[in-house]
Picture 1 (tube, rainbow, N blue to C red):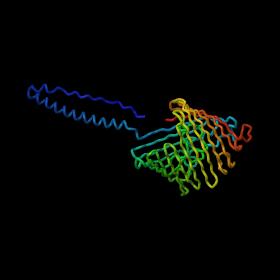
Picture 2 (cartoon, rainbow, N blue to C red; picture 1 turned 90 degrees about the horizontal axis):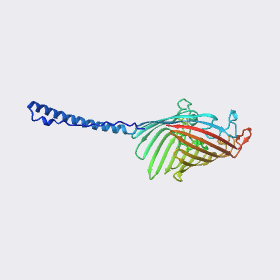
Picture 3 (cartoon, rainbow, N blue to C red; picture 1 turned 60 degrees about the vertical axis):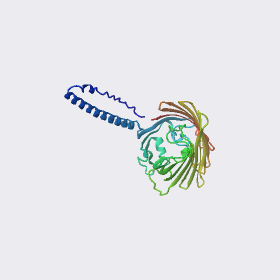
Picture 4 (cartoon, rainbow, N blue to C red; picture 1 turned 180 degrees about the vertical axis):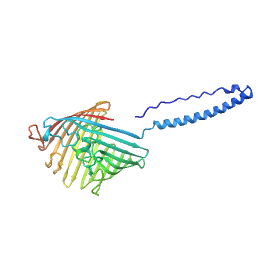
Length: 376
């Protein structure tokens, strides 16, 4: 937020020296000297005004350095399954899968923006952050906290180049919990890539069209590339609707992400994706109807159908060709910068991949989450 500056008001009042000109020569000389100094004072005054205006204008410009982020924490409890020990149950999706009072992450984002160039350093600490950066090949302390780290160059009004590690362009959801309408995440988001490291070029094509091309390390290799093989990505966008493509290590994913305003208070988000790697993969669709009841409360439902082919392992471990219907109802109440999210979730699978309270195989899992997120 820009700091309000106090404005100084200068007023120049000229002296009436001319009335002394009818006196003696000494008085006349003194008066002429006064007039001379008066002219100098005027010049100094106007120079000071110009300098003050320039300084004030510079101070009112948007600061180049920015600091933002979130913290999140939550309580989670299964309603029809064990909550403790080796038999504790959780959905197969990422994040929000610890039981009891649990931690999410502290996310700190530092950015610096000049007219043409800038950088972003995005650090994440805590279980959610570790899950998002789970496969750092060097397994170093640095690799386990760097969520994003990239520099960019606005080559022109139509072309921006970005080099480094950045969050994925696929999927409707993101890592930061303050942006998603639901606190827990979908299967589609969980089993697509979280981040990429590489070089991408974004293009403003005009007429509400945009495009992106990228050369990337294989998925999850975020610190460096030990394989000497590369992936490529592409995106075509039009008015908030995006078709995304990723070819990576023999696998290929196509993803659609978008949404529509159905009314002033109702929005429908959509995500559909399909991934295949030699007969093993997944496909699915998720709908995100959101109803804004007031300026401080939104009710969101995520209805997702997700099916894996072969022994992909997303839903039931070694179970093959399993599918799941996951319904998640989330309330989002905002109190200043604090967001409270109570959430009910039901996962219903095609095979008995869960355990009930009697430790018998079960096709469904119901759970409750209450999350607190502070965004700054």
